[in-house]
Structure formats: C-alpha cells, structure tokens
Length: 455
Image (tube, rainbow, N blue to C red; front, side, top):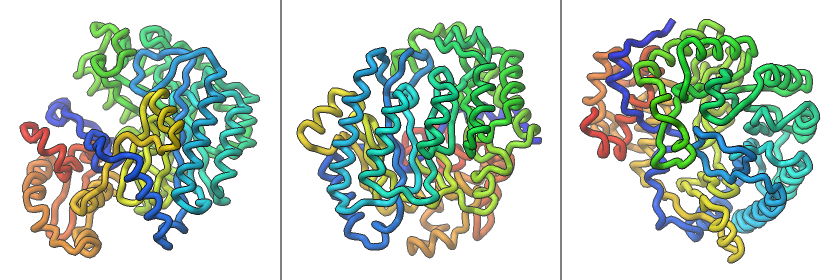
C-alpha cells in the first residue's frame, strides 16, 4: 500500500500544473483571437484525415443558484432563471459560427457539460441544448455524454430525463459530508439524499456515477474527513476525484468569505492525502493519476493498463485523442495545434456574438518544441512510461541530446525513488505516480523558467 513521508511531500510542495494541456492556460496569449481560431477550424476542414475524426465538445453552463465559498470557476450566481434561455441562444450563435468555419457537420464522440451548475437548467432547457447540438453535429453511436451534477438540483425525474437524453456518466459534486464543513463553505447538502440519487441513477442504467471531494477545506478534521471517506466507499462510486482546495482569495472573491484560521495546516493536508490514498486503494480503486481514482472495471482503469489513456482539457479519457470544441463563456478549445479560450464574462461573450465574431479572447499556437514536450509530458501523465525511440521517430530528434538538461535534473528524482532511468526509457515508479506532475514539470520549459529555484 502506497504511503508518503511528510518530508518527501514537503520537498514537492510547489504544485506544478495539472497538465490538462501543455503549455498551460497561463501561457495563452491575447494576441491569439477570433481570426486565429477561425483559421484553425478552416485548417481542420482542409485536412481530409483530420476532418473525418470525431470531435469532443465541452459546453460551459455558468449559472448557479447559490454561492459556494470555495469556488474558483467562472460562474453567474442568480435566481433569475430566464437568463438561461438567452444564454442558450448565444450558445447556438457560437456553434453556428464554428460550424460555418468547419464547413461540414462534424461527428461528436464525447460531450461534457460543466459550469457553474449544468443542472441549474431546467430539464426542457437541457433537452433543447442537446437537440441543438445534434442539429449541427452528428453524434457517433458510441458517444460518451457526461455532466457535472450538484446533488441539490436533481431528483428522480431529472435523472430519468437525463438518461433519456443519452447521458451515461454523472459526476456528483459532493465536496464533504460533514455538516460543519458544509456550513463553513456555504454548501449544505444531505448525504442520505445523495445516496438515494446514486441508487436511482444505477436503476436508471447510468454507466458511471462519480463524485468529487475537496480536502483542505475549513473545519475539516482527520476524524470528519475519515468519516466522509467511509461514506464515499459505501457509495461505491465508479470514480472519485480527490482535489486539494487551493485558497486564493486575492484571485477568487468567494474565497474571501472563508476564515483563514479555519483552514487546516499544510501538514494536516499531507496527512489527509495519505489517509485518502490508503482508504481508496484498500477499497479496490485504481489510482489513475493526479486526483483521480477509478474502479478496476472502469474504462479509465482498463485504458491505463492497456496504454490507451489520454488527457485533455476534460481530464483523463479512454476515448481516442481528438480535437476539442469549447462552447460558452470561458469555454476552452483545442483544435489542431492551437488552444483557445472564450471571453470569461457574459457581457463580453455576448458582445462578440452580437458582432458575429467567434468569442475567443486568448489562445496559443503551439511551436514544434511545444508539441515535442507535450508528447513527453502526456506520456508521463497517462502511461507513466516514456520510450525515447517513440519521440525520436515522431519528431526526428535525438532524445538524450534534446533533453540532456532534463535528464540530468531527473537524476535527483531517481535518487528519491520517483523514476527509473535507462538508456532507452523513463519510467515513473509506483511511489512517483502520486508526484507525477513534479516529474512532468521537468520537461515544462515555462514552469522550469519560473520555478528554477525549487528544482
């Protein structure tokens, strides 16, 4: 059973990016705008091989009825439900613009709705959104449809409607089951109701019910978090996302409502992670990577064992790697060798569409070096193994020469037991799997330049 010393975790306390992309969001440039994104879509249209591949689609639905103090998302807290209808009209305008530049009706193999609270929308509105997407695209027979769920906003009828729409995966945002913690973060919810929703979801035939927990929240104790973990294990969720809370009140206004004296210490957070890791592995979950655990029967576990695991802005995926179309305010896309992000406020997002412009405010065109390093980083994040020859053949480089400095830096991680280096390959050890972002960051030239003092 994996376990980590506080000293080891302390040495790697500086958190490298989660690498849902490389380069990360902090490297997106405002010089990349609507014209560049349009060119990326048109280039996809001109490439016969690429245009035949299905897309993944992400839709950002920003609305929430209540404010959660830990929130770090682009959202709109409102009880005026009429806003959602106007927002769906904006989504359709953006979708139509993107399809015009693509020049054809693309296939879609993956759809994910997030926010905000996607289930803030009424069932009829979600049905309208899915129908809209199907009118501009073609869903493949094996399309994977998923969405994030606030348990307080759904009931049995809602779940039945979602299943009828084709959704097969639900991700319940639970965060913590302790009433004191819930009061401290302004998110009260009844665990018995969550348990009932899980049972109903399984009866309705959903393929997967996952949940997300946050650790490091105010008022959390070892005893209370252990009790939360015990309840999670009893639910037998197919996937568990275990995310550390990052207190950044200077960046995210809702977090200013959290009292810093109520936050646990960094030592407690490390111990909490160790407890969670031990509990979930003992309960039969596989550690997929970063903050994600999955049952051994889950497609992600199978994909990792078979070397088919991928990672993109939606997280880990068993789907073949493909382009991602982002829709809605703050929506993120990855088309070809470009990344893009939409306007992050409703006002600016609306303004672009009123002008019949794609609402892209920043992005990035990846360089050849970016693409090489992306392949290396994603190989480490997803497979925990890297064959130098595979990179050499793909990019016509000599790996030991190209990454001479990085291989030298990895030697101290090898001494700590986190990696194994040979003349032909790099492997992440079982111990290193939990600190894989620190390992991957060695190949991140942007991160290395900014944090060289910590290496």
